[in-house]
Image (cartoon, rainbow, N blue to C red):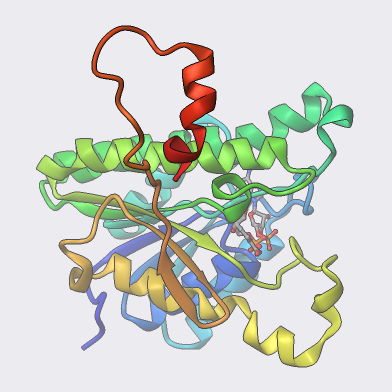
Amino acid sequence: MGLLDGKVAVVTGAGGGIGREHALALSGAGAAVVVNDLGGSRDGTGTGQNMADSVVEEIRAAGGTAVANYDNVATVAGGQGILKSALDAFGQADVLVNNAGILRDKTFAKMEEPEWDAVVAVHLKGTYCVTRPIFLHMRESGRGGSIINTSSTSGLEGNFGQTNYGAAKAGIAGFTRCLAIEGQKYGVRVNAIAPVALTRMTEDLPLAKNEAFQERMSPKHIAPLIVYLASDLAKDVTKKIFFVGGGQISEMRMVRTPGVTKKEGLWTPDEIAGQIGEILA
Ligand code: NAI
């Protein structure tokens, strides 16, 4: 008996990197899988069917069940097409992993509108476009479901040269927390991961050439958390953001300090300056 027997999982951007490992692991746990991938390059240019097709072949060769989908997550029609692939092939969708992503790193001074729009479109709007039809399906089916989004430490902690990507990834964290509240009464759980792994997205890192590091940071270390979150083992887990990579799993939290409350009247800037240490403590 697999942990996900009878479930149908949709993974976006599953033609390579982290998403491919998600798809293989979900299938290994018994889920039927929709392998979505637009098949473009790291910066989101180009399209192709080979990436999704090769992962579907891998899953089938291992005895699993999968279909390919080549839709663009950044469009409403693409999101609807992805749900249609799940319904046509398997009649339902129980798990959605929003994983598709691109990079167009630039310092903010050089960040022009095309770099901004392309990255926000795939990550943040893409999460909306794919989640909405599948969320509605999960709600109407009465079966609920598990939605797992992909945020990043770049958005939650900050990273040089990634204002576009970081803004989109922090937006996905906010999306996750809000939709988790709305999904509760329909049994739809919504969580996010902030993964770290060596893929084509991170191949420029100097450490990427180190063999021990390659094994430790393989994207296969991310997938077990996805299988757990997809499964009924996590039936009480929602509205959480997990850091995951290199064998470590931890929770990333938004923290509000106890702060200082002025009992009457408005703060003056001088008073704030006088108490800034306690406000930030
Ligand atoms: P990757 O580039 O290997 O995988 C991304 C996949 O998404 C590719 O197969 C690509 O073809 C697909 N894709 C891109 N645009 C698409 C679109 N519009 N529609 C459908 N598919 C599309 O990169 P990686 O590292 O596997 O990234 C997976 C996710 O994890 C991304 O959301 C990324 O931002 C996130 N992430 C990765 C980190 C890492 O350390 N590798 C760190 C933090 C977050």
